[in-house]
Image (tube, rainbow, N blue to C red):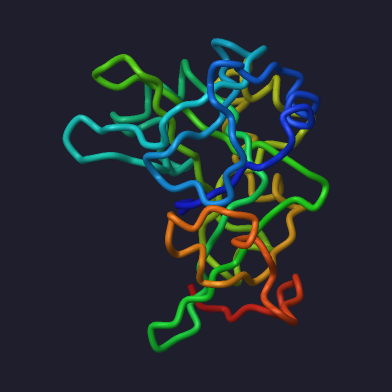
Length: 222
């Protein structure tokens, strides 16, 4: 599951990382608490030279809006099969959030991020009834960093595999839907401010006082 993310990198840093130009009419602003229905910034196979916004959430034919697609079944789901075959994309991010189960109804927000800067999540896109682009983030089993927090995580596309994700075959993309793609991630507890999407400032990502990144901070629940 991936239900909240962020993107606040300097535009020039984004462009350097992805080797693409940020769309000047897209209204890019730093976001620390991006929720479903908001815009995600993406690089698509159809326009690999541009970082452009898409609404987060693909409408299914009968079963509502989907913000995630499971890597294990994406090619068999009517909502995603065509997009998986023909419309892959990279979702730019500075990190995503999960909630660790602490028991008795208590859930601790955790920020999961790459200390070196922005990175890419695997996604697919399509268009809604109005012709506007919409995107879903692909998820896979969690790696060692995320597993103590949640059993699923978004697919992290390695920096050197962006072209393979965008231009390769579905088989090539399937090989990249591996938890090992996120081996460079770190995790740290943050405040419950992230629970409310209207809280969208740098304060959201501040570690809790005394919090330390690492597996020993988290319970095995979730």
